[in-house]
Image 1 (cartoon, one colour):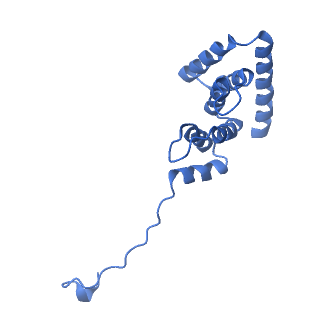
Image 2 (cartoon, one colour):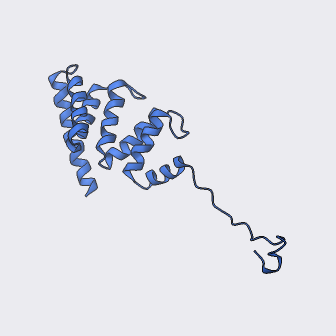
Length: 151
């Protein structure tokens, strides 16, 4: 406050301009676009469920899960498996679902791993041995190409 007006309250400090924080979805998207796999996975979840003011959009969910999976996120790989297993926004494809479950299992531990193993094994009952072999081969090739890219 101004010294001359302390007693009468005529002078006030200038208001301080405060920047409004960006909405969470905007901050998340910015991080995701910079390659942050945690943000990519969260954005995928948010599109899948319609959280944080986003409209449910399975195509966007798949896109962001794929970005995160390509960056090594096993939860994103498991989420892709779920999308393909149940045909959520994509054509139902059990071979693709099995492949993504396989990819996720390789990098998960304990309870998370057990859950994805159960989903994969339940799915295996609907596949022929040839389809399972194809899914495993696709997973192996994907892992090899991703490891080269991440190094």
